[in-house]
Amino acid sequence: MSSTALANARNIVGLINDGAFRGLRQLPPDTFNVAVTSPPYYWARDYGLIDQLGHEDTVEEYITSLARIFDEVKRVLHPEGVFYLNIGDTYYSGNGQPHGIDPRSPSRNFMRSKYRPVDQPGWGIPKKSLIGIPWKLAFELQNRGWTLRSDIIWNRHNAFAEPTARDRPHRQYEHVFLFSKSRFYSYDRTALEDDEDVWSIPIGRERRIEHNAPFPVELAERCILTGSPPGGYVLDPFVGSGTTLIAALRTERNAVGIDLSSAYCGEVAELLRKKHHCNPVDWQELENRLSTEPSGWASWKGNKANYRKPGTKREAESQPHNGQGVAPTHTVEP
Image (cartoon, rainbow, N blue to C red; front, side):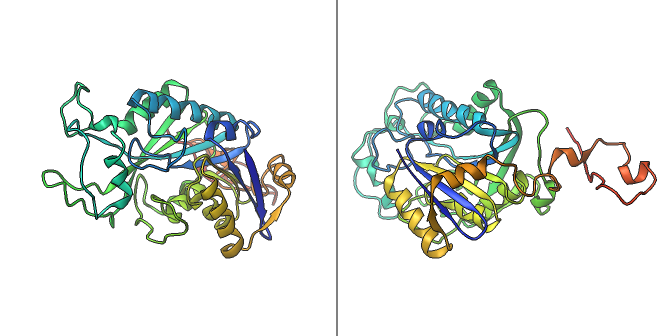
């Protein structure tokens, strides 16, 4: 494992080059206000790494591997924290290994050299079926104690067409599940910008580093703004191209990202130095920052201490005005 910390004038980010589970074990409990991540999808890409996630022999092994990692996310999440999980599905082919070259998607040509389990017969479900991985994972996390609060539909309205799919609609959305660590938590709905549980956010076409599947900064920013206060703490256990770290800096939060790829970690660190005005600092500075309460925590409108129950009056309405204190502004809903 190696770790790097970088800081700009206001915030600090850290990069841990290790597997997600091992990297999370290095972090303190009950710390991060929001976790935002998109793990490798099941047999969708080949990152060329030993022990890479997404290449398990069975869906059950894949789900268990992710759930074990997200148990650690739950450990390091603040008691009032939330977790945004972007996850896509995979089709079961069962038709044997494909041949030839796919000129439209070179990143998927790895399946010509690796015989994927989803191409092997004998699964006991009809060929060409969606496997249902997002919901399988969501239910497993629910069984492990996570509260599943919302299934957000990410409408990727500029998604690439699927020219080989002639007998079904092309895929233009993915799931972004919102989990909370406990029944009562902190959250700022005003940052949703009236999109509620369907988010129409285009896929980012900017190629920041040599990464196959980055998700857009705007998506990560919305998750961060709803789930953390100014100066708060953000986590991404599969940092990839650095989207979450960039979004954290743009929204003036601190963040930690983890990735198994030393190439990705190195390229993201270089990107933060060159384009986001960050300079290397001692890792202890990051640890010191994480050990203190975020600067905007008490006054943040999403802080559950600033909620009020439906039907109750605000403090300013129920008591004579004395010019002291800030009246809560949110209501608590099911």
